[in-house]
Image 1 (cartoon, rainbow, N blue to C red):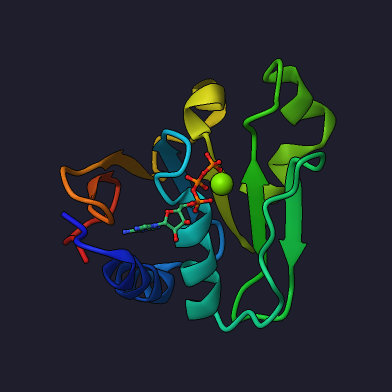
Image 2: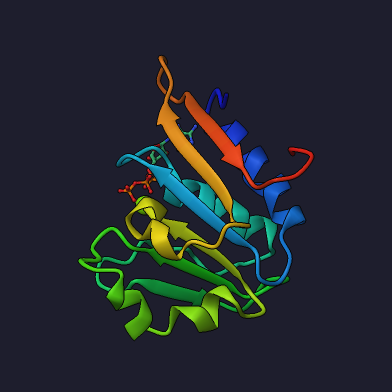
Length: 140
Ligand SMILES: Nc1ncnc2c1ncn2[C@@H]1O[C@H](COP(=O)(O)OP(=O)(O)OP(=O)(O)O)[C@@H](O)[C@H]1O
Ligand SMILES: [Mg+2]
C-alpha cells in the first residue's frame, strides 16, 4: 500500500537500485494511477536528469544519461501488438537497458515472463495507491 506520492517516490528510487541491464518493468493501472509518476521516480533513481515526458505520438522514449539506458514505453495508443514488432521492440526488451512499459496489459503477449509486473489501483483515500507486484524476488 502506497499512502501518498512521497511513498511512490521512495518506492521508485528503491526499485531503480534493483534494476539491471535487460530489466523490464510492466506497469498496469487505470488513467491517473501514477504510471508516469512512478516512471519519473525510477528514472531519477537511475540518475537520469532529462525530463520524462508522456509522449502522445511516440510509443518509446529513450534516455541515456543515467546509470543504465532507459526505454520508456507508453502503449496506450497501440492498436495492435504488431506495432511493437514494427518498431523493433526486441532490441529494447532484450538489450542492455531498462524498459518501463505503461499499459503493459495491452501487449501482455510479448511481456517476458521474468518481467517485474506492477499492478496499480486506487486506494480509498486521495493519494493512496495499491501496488500488486510480481517478479521482484525478496520484495523491496
Ligand atoms: N501515490 C501517488 N503516486 C503517484 N501519483 C500520485 C499519487 N498520488 C497522487 N498522484 C498524482 O496522480 C497523478 C498521476 O498521473 P500520471 O500521469 O502519473 O498517471 P498515469 O497512470 O501515467 O496516467 P495515464 O494512464 O494517463 O498515463 C499525478 O498528478 C500525481 O501527482
Ligand atoms: Mg502515463
